[in-house]
Image 1 (cartoon, rainbow, N blue to C red):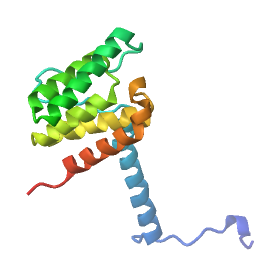
Image 2: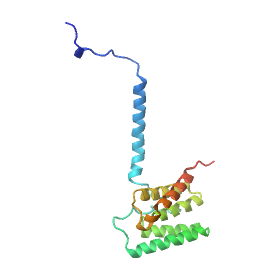
Image 3: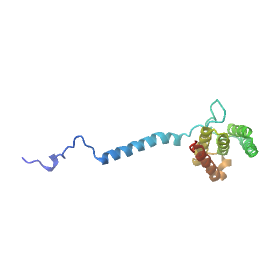
Length: 170
């Protein structure tokens, strides 16, 4: 009895693997690695490291928004931080930005300010994490309402700081 088309098997290759399979496996493995390492950061941004602070940085943003008084204090502290930064007082600027974030943890502009202070002080890791946190807030539209009109500018500043922080050092 002659074998039918259904019963025929393809000749088996032993000890050889086609380049198509190798390439497919490599691409699949790379994609899995990219998802495994990139996805958690996209969903849960790294908590920023505040300059010279041994305790955990800033608590995650609360489910509620701060009251008008807290928001006003946060903006005032942020503006004082900017003024201190313009006068080269990085220590004072960092303190003002931290206070602003204690009052309003979603104030992306304050994270950008902290990232700039860290960058100026040569603390690349702090600069990177604060810039990444600001970018995450801005891209997910989870930033404080006061940032809404300045979102593109803040995003551009945060990306520039991140790029500078990630630049290889001699």
